Length: 383
Length: 140
Image (cartoon, rainbow over all chains, first blue to last red; front, side, top):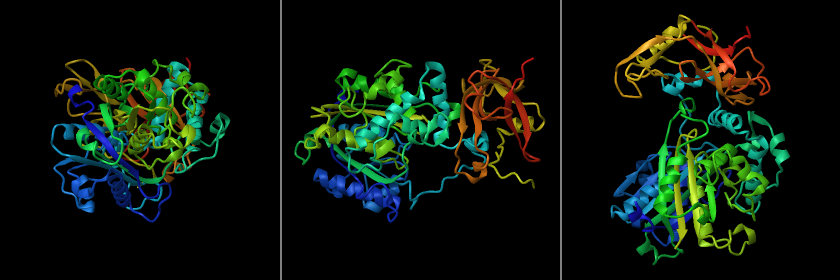
């Protein structure tokens, strides 16, 4: 694994032309716009692309729409973590010579539901038989169930969960692309509409329309391209279950495995991470991920996020785009965590004050998919 | 046809004995005979050994609340009028967990707790389907 470390770079990133509320574009056009912009930023064309990676739709549909016939196709689709997992798959494909230029795309019309598949649970599916009859709203209810167990085992409080939502909103206030930019307090979170105990509305991610994409190639080739190369130091992935009723433990998940492998491969320590992009579908997703990735001990997540430690200017810069809680979350958020980490490591925000994490040189990106089902971790570095 | 409007399970050949047992108000779940361990949901082989040395066993239907949520909002019209209600993960005495609803208890985080002893209530929602729900075990 160490042989793959640092050999491949991310050379272009982009969102779709608009994000947030985009009722006039089908989901696949959000993929396409992001792909076009990410390639342009890299100084590459679609004819350079010979590796295609996506989730949510088939790579065959994506390739057809963009006129790309790849040598490597990877449709790993395990929820919102998929695009972080694609970083590792694409890096492996490039480092082993199976392809030269990888394009990873995402696009979802999560809010407007234009060109999206219907959400159905067949009654003879396992979920249709063993979960759907009981009326658990998905995915929010699943994360709420799991969170109840963390509160029971470790005394984690709703106030501690709210710290995450408040700090993330402070980052969103610095990002003109963020969907919600008004300041909020811990009281605002606790007093927002109850959804599924212990979650209130502001514990939950947005539902938006958005696309995102990034382009990868060998570090050797990246040196001649437009952007400062951001290299892939390490990556890991895993999953433990599909249905929340089958989750082996509600206070531990696949991030424990994906993070361990990513850190070992990268050969860096937790203290060397300058910023963390941690998938925030719900406040609990973040708290549990921080523990499972080893940034704090088991059960210490609540204390770790208290006192606004993850806010701008705090000791632990996290979700610096405003996250899925306040910037954008169209259903599967992972690609946007990658995009923001790359921009921070390139120092794209140097003229924007505290929006730029000072001297950012190593970032951890963590994706969670399904109902705490899957995990993908990538460690990236400024070359 | 009954007027039941919520999602109903459609048993498949592997899971049918479970649903049949609920219909008879005598729940059965599967055990792996290689390891002696119970498992749930029903499978055509043991998830511990991949062996087909498995059997159906009658169980008490008693357990404890392992995790729970109170649903205050559900956009699904079939459930929208029922809020608030409790969805729980129940751990049966045999060690397996399943999703269900709690009945006979206030849907309030002050009245439901993890570790609460519960027992099965057979809810005959249609002529064909009986759903397993759970209620607190009354103090004796």
